Every structure is written in C-alpha cells, then in structure tokens.
Length: 385
Image 1 (cartoon, rainbow, N blue to C red):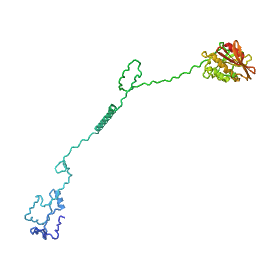
Image 2: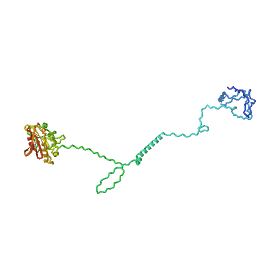
Image 3: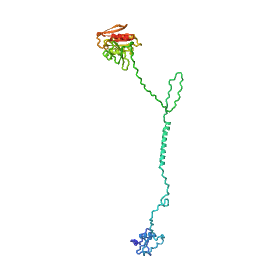
Image 4: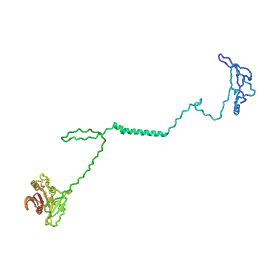
C-alpha cells in the first residue's frame, strides 16, 4: 500500500459549479502538478507509522520517490502547519500502558468533590435503645393502669355503717359520724359446726310391784294367748308370778294403750283415757299355776296428775263394752256371760265368766289396775302391789 497512488477519477481538474453571484474556481497550472491535472498529496501508510513507533520518531507521511513538490496555496489563503509535521494529518498517539485512573475532583475529569461517607452504626446501640424504649412504654402502661386510672375512674368502696335503729329510751340520738372511705377490711366468716344431738337415753322399766315378782323377763313383742310360749317361761318352782317388761325397738317401755290394742283390739282413744297411764311402770305378767299352765295378765297405773275417778269410769265402760276376748286366752274360752262384781282381799273387782269355765278379772288397787285371765294370778298380783 506504500507505493499505491490515488486516482482522482474522472472530472478531476474540471471547474466546480457555483451558486448565484459566485465566481467559478479554475484549475491552476504550475510546477508540481502531475500530468493529467491531479495534484499529489503526502500519504502515511501503516508501514511508515509502525516504523516511526518502533524508532520513537514522529510518524511522517509516505513520500514516494521522485514525487513532485506540492503547489503553494492560493493567493490570499494562509495555511498554518505544525512545525513537527509536514502534513496536516497526524497519527494519534497510542499508549500501551494501563489506563490512568481519573483524579477525583480534577478539572475536566467529570467527577465532583468527594462527599464524606457516613460511618456505619453499630448494631448493639440500636438494640439497647429499643430495649430501653420498650421498658419505658411498659412502665408507663403499668403506672397508668394501677395509679392514674383508679384515681379518676375507679369506684370507691364504702363500708356499710350499722346504726342502732332503736336506741334505749331516754338517750338522745346522736348524729352518726360521716362515713369514711377506707380500704376493704377482711372479714372472718364464722363456721358453724353442726352438732349431732345424741339420741335420748331410753327409759328403763320401773316395776310397780312393791314385792318383786318371782321371776322377770324382757320381750320386744307383746304376747297374746297364741304367742305366750314365745316368752320362754319355765314351769319350774310353780306356782309363780313372772313379770314381763315389754320394750319397743328403741328400748323404751311399750305403753298400756298399745298393749290393750294388741291383745283385746280395744282403742283407748277417748279424751279421758289419753296420756293418763304410767307407761314406764306398765308391764305384763305370766302366772304359772301348780299344774304348769300359763295365764296372761297386765298391770299399770294412772298418773298422779290425772283424775283417778274419771279414768276409772271411762276405762270400766270401754273395757266391759268390748266383745273381743279370744286373743287373751291360749284356747277358745267359749261363750262369755255377763260382768259381775266381786271382792278380793277387800278390793272390789269385776269378772266375766265363759262357758269353758275360764274367767277374766280386773280391779283397782288405789291408782293401780290389774287384769288377769286367772283368778289365782289376779290375787297374787294384787298382793305384790
């Protein structure tokens, strides 16, 4: 490429067209003009540039040998060329070293003055500040709830004041002192312990016999003629009188009205015969005759607070009006007769005879009443009262 020449092409050296009012530019002929009218220009080639770089010289344009000298510039046109280069086209300087970093803030570098970088904050201070803030918030909440809120919104507790509604006569009523609001006072609730009352001690039987009976037994069932064998009274040492104390399930003596109801079917419910008997002394007895036969009998007394005459009249009428007698005998007594009066050891008595030869006797010795199915047993009981 160093020996190549440029062909100006057709039309080179022809006058250029002008615009309105302009003079055409005409090719000048002079020294250094190549044949054909095309001027020569100095051209730098790659080989010339590489050689200049290796030797450290300034690259110069390639000038072919025998080349004519370029023509001088037209009159009136000043041309200025750098002293170091015969041509107006310079090869750019190439630096094979590393790029030089721009100076920050240097003019034309495109960088402004550096601003100070903020120092990074330590994470421990932020956590500590957060903990302190939370503690303050919680403390303010507790203070507001337990101190400030009760001061303005809590309802005060007023202890009731008890006043004497009925002051003693003659004492002036003093005005009650104004109630003051105080802190709640703990009250002690008295605990009442239920006391179990022990059952009453059963009443023990008190015999009416001044002279004790030959024997005595206790039974929980009132014996009749049909159940007399259940008393287990022996026939040894007969004749004899055996006292029978009847007790209920609680151990209290069975009353006289209950015995009469069980044996004779008779209700002593008239007002004159209610609550007049000494039930603690009431008892039954069994008279065992010489042959070993057992006969039922009963003994009771009228309370000292009751009218003996009224009780005797009411009982005699009710007892003799009864018609049920079979329950007191061990066997059927037969047809009853009529009631008759008698006297035994100076004591008036009443008796009822039956067709079988049996009889029923009753009589009063003071306020004591004796009933027996055996006349011998009736006399024995009267003798012991």
